[in-house]
Image 1 (tube, rainbow, N blue to C red):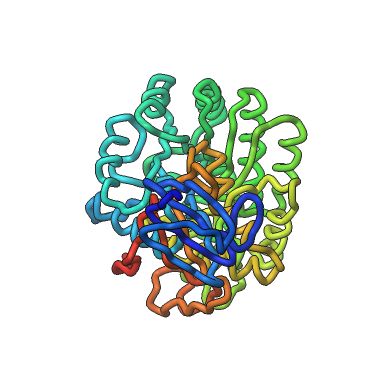
Image 2: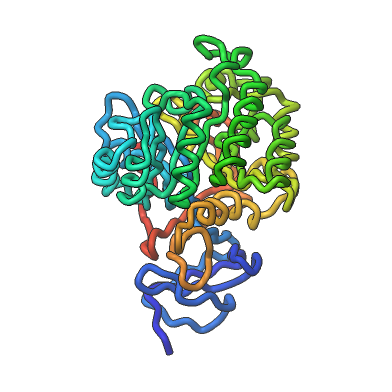
Length: 410
């Protein structure tokens, strides 16, 4: 009988075929078998989680890493520790703001070396700048960029200036030939105040106008485009309309937009660091409706929006915050795993990530979906002092159980 390196059992394994009691056999870092909970599966190490759920490790898209004044490798170690505490096993790092910004193959290699000690799998987005030409984008792709990111305003400030329509179309045309996804911060610079520091100066119409520009360019070029972060629920109809005319446009939102609003008590300290800002309570509820529109929803992924360079620390608590709000709406763990793991991995074609299935990497997260978790009042993020539901741990990366996910917070 086959002996596995390790076996993880749970009465609540979230797998593609459904949620239920199963055993997961792991060999050489990959899932080699998924069988009944009580199936005989000899292994050198067996972990029985009982009623604690087993999720695929989250894949966080567009994670900010850089913190001013800190060594780059230290930034990656800090983000890696926060990711593990938050059930994230793969990080797709934003190209900017960063030092150096990931806008050429040489700077990408600097980040690749710095990320070697992160403790999680790290992938990279390449930055689209005003001067990005076909060779620049092709070189970034060849060097390992899994997708690209551009902004129509200050989404990558100060390293990615706002693209105009001609530059946007030019970049999209090239990325279409590379079969690469373009992430876009869609707030339109012409609709923002100067400087855009308050919610009143960053109105939903800026997002709407930006999305109209993105749809027009994507329709001409055929580029696959992912709007992130998507916050203005009134723009959900634009997303749906884009799909109806054959435009490959999807979107990502963040748990803080789903859990908090501009009217939420205690949310004021983070209101000015969110780009776009926290919006109204009515918008928050409508954003949930757009996310939960089933097969009609073009909001396919939910990412942390972690951006320490701007003072937004969300990575550690995003999974629990999202689950807290989703469970109140009667949603299940399968949806949680789809939004945070399966759909992000599929979007970027990350082979072996995002699912508990044979042949996939053994990136696994124990998740106690009923345990209440108090967020320390000293936490630098938006959930400080709040009580969430859903505790992360243990975590496996490539079949290796991480025994310490309590490294000091940034």
